[in-house]
Length: 140
Image (tube, rainbow, N blue to C red; front, side, top):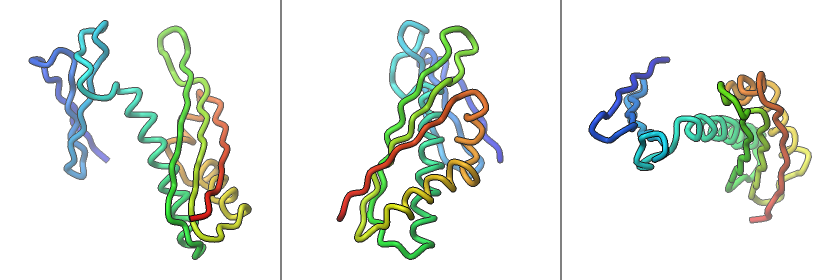
């Protein structure tokens, strides 16, 4: 896996990342740090990536189990250390999974499998952060 990050000096503290798969991602800093608030902060991007990784797993596990999943929303709340390096110290993941007749045990198991076995991002972040999960199921 590769990624190239370029500083966009004309935009203050903005950075453009080009991923190995050829996609572009913008990041920016807060105004008090010289940024212009034009894009997510790098740590917000890291948190979003972790959310995308685990939500992907949950949907894939449910689909492979032939469950009628039609939606998955994930709300992440994170706390960071007060001093540098300001690593994540706590992350809560709340899944809202929708579908037809989704067995609660299957949803809980999909979240557990992602959290304990498949999601590289949350497993890695779990080295510095306490990660907790919750979920709800919406019949759709």
